[in-house]
Image 1 (cartoon, helix red, strand yellow):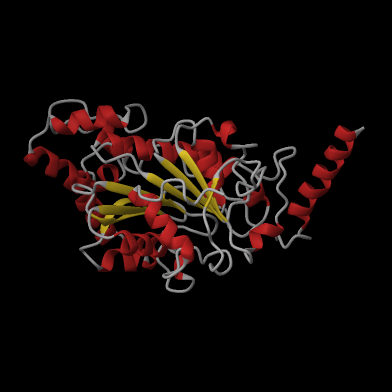
Image 2 (cartoon, rainbow, N blue to C red):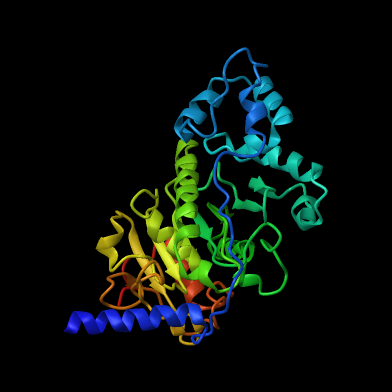
Length: 353
């Protein structure tokens, strides 16, 4: 009887998520962007080097890294010039080549949504895919020399056009990453990774896991690519729906620490259910509207337990002075100070409670 009652409650709460009584509205259904980078067909048929190029869909980032390690600088630059969209998005390719390739791709793209990304030639754009709503990743700091690296994974309504919007700055991946980098400083690097198709609005896409599943595959390949190029194992910060992505990626994700903030759930009952060797941290401020979202998972709706509850088993990160759903990285907040200490490896367990 008790199990039946719990099921009825779960159904009611899951229905609330979709019907809008918890503040959720209908969002447009998004088609997840999957598969290899644009331009892959031309890349596969190119024999300019007299040898087969690595297959972006089949070969691992480690295999891609070995391929580029065997090329001279002239051949590397030839591939950048001939296939900028492939090289710029090819996990395992040398970081500096990817920067140059994406600068060329952005310069050649007339879409005004990407004008701010193309305007500054000194920006370190690690990925740029113009298909659909657009995807992008940017590096703050120097990956070649950084001893500590972090990756920021955003939530809903983020794409190449909103990646570094000027309103709600700390709700954007560029704003979050830039703020974290300023707090950690020299010797660190932070990557703003908007490399998956995010939900639009807070409707059914945001209440289900299909976009997160596709995003988890892309995130794990991205971190595999970092490892293949010698980048230190990162701390991964996952905001809102991004924490669903990270929860699904966790068993395969190369990360030393996994930090979720403003999370609707990670599709896991507790830390053990994530099957990760990373330390797991969670933050939620007192006035974050995400607290009104039911923490259930039933028939594919909802994302499960609240990671900030004691039962979940994550280390709690203080966030008492953060404001709303997007204030966790605001300068001066205790959450940002804690995030920086975690990223630098100096926080230890003093934030667990």
